[in-house]
Amino acid sequence: MFDQFNRWSQIVRKPGAVEITHHHVIDVPPLGQAMPHPQARVGVRLLVRPLEPSLGVTAIDITSTQAIAMLEGFLQTGAHVGKRLSWQARGFGVRRHDTIHIQPIPGV
Image (cartoon, helix red, strand yellow):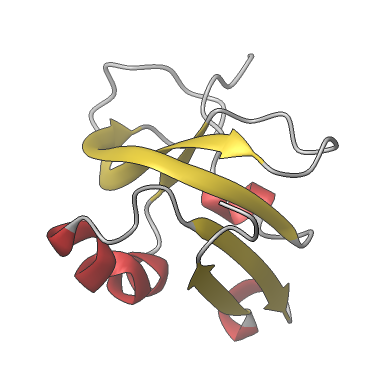
């Protein structure tokens, strides 16, 4: 089944960068499932503009409590809008460590 959600857990596997334009709360179903779904998890959808040609996403759905906690202060104050969000991950599964950077976009 086609999964229309661009999930943080899948995208973070390769380093990348996007410009954040907006965010909102969303219910995200398990992988390969569609909405409505009884096991959907509450998450955050970041609406984004890719800053790297190889990254063709316009939205990223995050259900990782660690990633949401790292972004929480920015999301509450609106300080994330128009900023560059870049990431990288090390490790796999429960030992994976995500690193998130939010900074101004150079030349803007």
